[in-house]
Length: 214
Ligand code: E4P
Image (cartoon, rainbow, N blue to C red; front, side, top):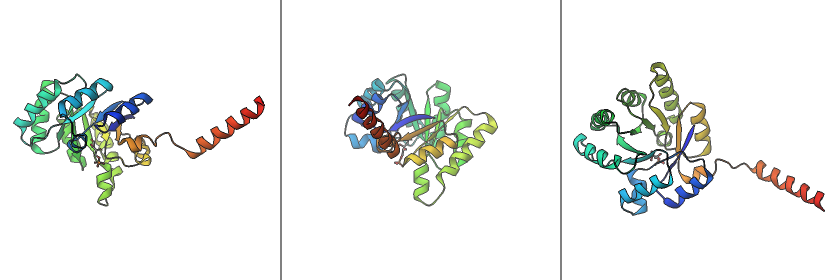
């Protein structure tokens, strides 16, 4: 499973990149707004740090307007993925993007049929939001299982990008369910390698080694 960071913060992106295990970035209008910087400049900076896919989201709600944004965004860097909302106008725009060779990430997916439709329309990534389903008492992980099953039935190449991951167990379960990508905030990413027994074990190894030197 690929690891994407779900952030538009350059410090977090640089710190993640330094570890060498960040395969891509997802942003959304809320994350970009938090940074208070010019959108296109920020996205270009992110693309320079991370060579993998970088999702940048449109903010229009009609196909024509989305396409204007999609064409502009896709010219920022070769690794830009245009993020479109999974609404009827977004699906119309998706078909045009697919025809024009613009890579896409269909966002705000909450049920399997949305995922099926965007795969049929050539989406590069589909983004089911697990955490937000869990928040309203639904089973977010079941959605990943359903989408994996459907995509495998038909051999769709659209990658399942498990989004809205809130803790490391979401990442583990998404990997077991066969998600192609997990995108997570930096706070979750930092926890991926942590285990108290690793720290305790290392401390003991080093203490024993010191004894030998003495
Ligand atoms: C993914 O592309 C989204 O930006 C993100 O995962 C949403 O997460 P949230 O529900 O924690 O805002």
